Image 1 (cartoon, rainbow, N blue to C red):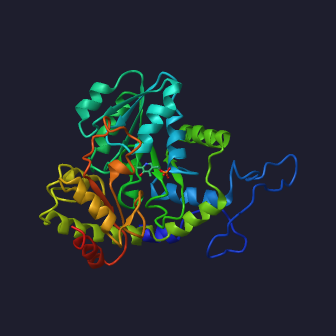
Image 2 (image 1 turned 180 degrees about the vertical axis):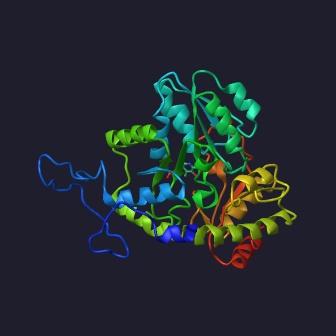
Image 3 (image 1 turned 90 degrees about the vertical axis):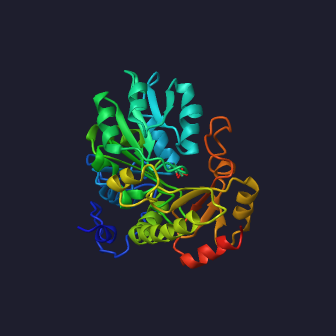
Length: 373
Ligand SMILES: *Cc1c(COP(=O)(O)O)cnc(C)c1O
């Protein structure tokens, strides 16, 4: 089945007796039990809810995975995955990782004696040098955000598996519409569903997809024990938004390509970071493992004053963190999304501007930028 079809005709184990065209919201905390001897499929929403199941199954299908889980946020999903590790384990983390993930593994998990080591995973020799017997997981993003470094998922998976460790890929940046890490050998896919999967800046949610039954059981246990699953209404909103994932992502990407061309030719732009630019060092690799470079663009101006002026001056671009929304956003990562990483540890230029492109008319977006240099 083509993916657009998959988006509006998701396979589901949830049976609706009335065949509603838009699935109902099971806005309930508890479910009645038929008898004391038989276990009904659902008893308590923390443990399971049909609305959540519907969406979890759909995201699993989109990621070409067997088992999907929905969490109250991307960080809850990441905390659950990292929480699979034991005290004393070592985790290798990509060195241009999301700020919240950096904080999670260095600050939150530090007291559980987890050893987090940051590695440039675009260089497999560096990964090989950092892998030890204690390494149980490697966690990456590709492309990274905002610098768009590309890691070879397939080659990394082989290397990681040779050391009996798990490869977890945070696929938030591209979404399964553009990249499916499980098909390239990853063991775990994580999402901040707040971004592309939702796309409307209305839901905070996270997702995890795996293929292995044992991993799935561990995640299900942890989710039920810790109680961090996505609520029914949020699950329903996500299911609603998912139907247009393909339309949104394609349109946003098409807009992004035109804005990249505009920026690359602009005299005040010093450097553009976009993996879809042929002169980008990860261009060929990204082309080979993904269906595009998505709709995030970063660039430098060599002037913090100019970068700030642009971020504060644009009208159509909302100054906000996050990405993957219908509406275009603009931000200064060092002052916003990456402020939780200390200036010494953060390897980002202070004047770096990040654009998250929406579905507006691209001429209007370019006009908005053009007014503010
Ligand atoms: C936003 C984001 C997260 C965190 O997700 P929340 O839904 O905000 O908790 C994790 N990883 C990446 C790559 C993100 O962009």
